[in-house]
Length: 143
Image (cartoon, rainbow, N blue to C red):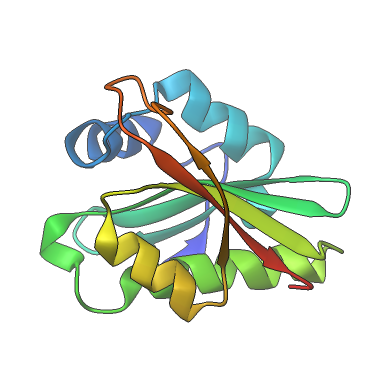
């Protein structure tokens, strides 16, 4: 099941997913920041629990994908692509002409997913993440 997150979504479960699956997990406060301010572009998918989510925001005509996470048992089924595609559609519907995000340089599957959606590498940020790994800034122009 896929839908739009809202402030009423179970943030503790989402934080648990982030902590388990992301290189740099978000706190419950960061999760709430996105969901409470931009619920219309934060997308989640449910299986038995939350299977995945994309947290996003809009500033002017620019959309930003802050985080995409899919639990391992739901991976390789197109869920990440669906989450990001839905988020992009919602941002474009609200006037965005550019969508950006950062992805870890070593995350080949994520980079492949974003490239398949039309994202281009713009910048490499050295030691971007707390653990010292690099990231690419990716952009989808005229989204």
